[in-house]
Image 1 (cartoon, one colour):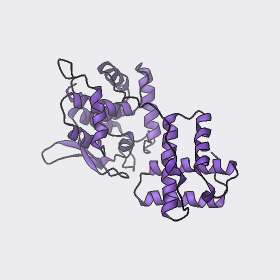
Image 2: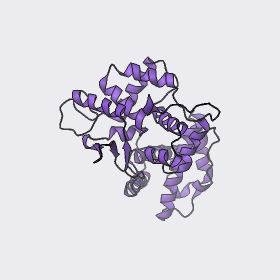
Image 3: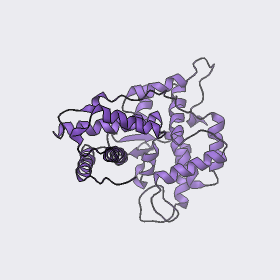
Image 4: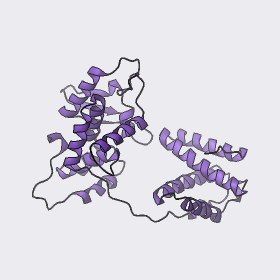
Length: 295
């Protein structure tokens, strides 16, 4: 994407991103918002708009149509609208504009697909193909057994794998953005997988838990690509890394773990986010599915 050429636009985008950082937004969120606003401001420039005070709801609706015409999905457009609304609220709060046209900008209508949950056959197949790579197997097992986010896994350090005075193993998830720190218990299967990886982990001064063969921190994109390839080898279609988290949540709810407990374990800010998984549980089954810890 082209950089912003309008100096005033560039200044407001820069100030906006700094404001987001000052409010404790995660770096991933800051980067996403910055790119969205960069795209918006470049569109304005292409339309001959040089001042944000000139923009109207018609300009924003035209931008939305521009995105639709360029085959952006309704979900992507909705995210960009959120970024736009946040940006215009910032402009209003800082008296850069007198009126906020983005308040009237409507989200596109789209159906939210239910979370994808791996079947028992699928996650067993994923485990099987992952066993040839000790690091990959450790990552898959940790994601399946704890439900943590891929970004949280990527930032784990050696010191984050801990145990209580009673000998209960857990991982410590540091606060990120608006998500507070939390402790997530790990079962024997996950602990064994981590220990086996630590035995072959390259020697490095980096304290990140998962590292490359050269001893550098393993990035989110590396983890995502590796697991996507494992899905392909296992013959699992239409699955993403986040589906391991979905599977953890669904299986534990099906096994009778309370909504509140599961919500705290996975770091949901709202209980309603966890509740949406209840619809995936077939209460007519004679027996609740096993939780992953029993497999």
